[in-house]
Length: 348
Ligand SMILES: C[S@@+](CC[C@H](N)C(=O)[O-])C[C@H]1O[C@@H](n2cnc3c(N)ncnc32)[C@H](O)[C@@H]1O
Ligand code: SF4
View 1 (cartoon, rainbow, N blue to C red):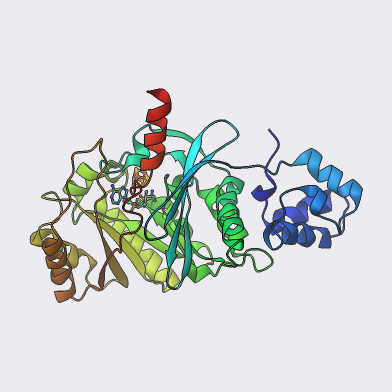
View 2 (tube, rainbow, N blue to C red; view 1 turned 135 degrees about the vertical axis):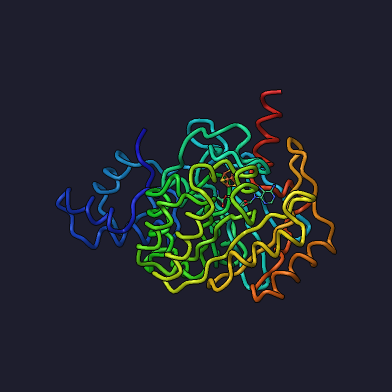
């Protein structure tokens, strides 16, 4: 299978051009056609010599994603199911905010991490996405927004999959979307979320970027976290917190800790107090997420007043806390849920 046109960073295109004895500016021209003019075939790249267009056509493919279906929520959130060249299916979401449009991208087909509340992991990991398959999700969304004269203003790497288990492709994806000669998405408007792949938190801290990091913590201690997230047995709670402290010290950037509140499991005031103690003094912020119901899982939501109670305990202890605004709740809101439904419908 030929690589995708979206797989290469600008540097990658420059190397490609150099290997073929082409002038360096050809790389920037190709990048401009892909990400500024957003054409969908090589024939449209009219300032490139015909021979070069033919060469590109021979070496690369354009079509990355085929829309299978989409759903639109009352709040404007749009959820897409895209088919890949090998029949796998992924989800991408556009969220409409007052401050702009945010795209939630998927980094893997499925996930092998096995968090007990997550629909993305139900069928295990099928494969990693390439950088281009992640980029193509943003390009597709941007092409749709083009019709309304709007742009993708932020990205969250919070769709199905664990980005730090597909590290190189995720980093290339990030380099491509932030490139000023391309989509030019502001680094501070991008957030990568991890379940806590400790060695790659260190690696990410040492990359020279302004991209935000979110860590899915979901429990205030080792024992409870291991019950909810098997990854905690591989990278224990204390090691995770240490890695987060390194990240904060190295980058001077604030971490967002995501905490899905699950009724009767991790949502009691004593859990909040324990979490506050762990996070004491760290440059961080806690985002509370009322757990989305996944039919295959038995978890229930925390009552509204208890969510506010949990928040109060954290804030009382000086921890900046927000409750995630729910979007697209009427259209299979949990990550991977639409895909899971689709797989069920085709396999019976
Ligand atoms: C789907 S994950 C993808 C990124 C990465 N794998 C991670 O776990 O951070 C994005 C966020 O969704 C959360 N999540 C997954 N299933 C959920 C559910 N049923 N309800 C609420 N949040 C959920 C995860 O814990 C994580 O914070
Ligand atoms: S929450 Fe993230 S890491 Fe956990 S199973 Fe879902 S996608 Fe994978």
